[in-house]
Image 1 (cartoon, rainbow, N blue to C red):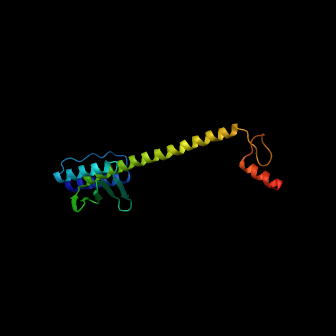
Image 2: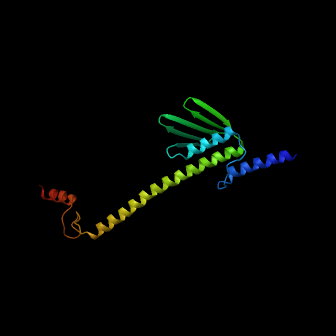
Length: 172
């Protein structure tokens, strides 16, 4: 009876984290086998590498990572209860407990979120820079006198459109 209650609470915790606890901190599990520990270290290194490519499938909730080092690609697939590591020709399947899988998923999500935030800041920085430039150009244009094609405005050098309009008017 006690064992089934413990399993019930573990499952409840998993569901809670999956649906409600997006900001909960997941700690690296302790007491893993040597194979699992090595696989999780490889996962962490590849996911956190700046030149790695990270992909996520929202339908199956699987995480994928690719890292290429001098034409030797390493592919990682975090699937339900399993971490697959493919190193060129050799493939390894490491079966994970729920806590280990949660840690790998959290590590992946944290890195994807960091990259997304960095991308967003760069993109928004360009927009703000463009808006600042636009404002400067508009203020500069407002301060300079100009001639419009309809004859209004101050006297100055005609623009290219005014010159064409004047030529058509005189019949030249």
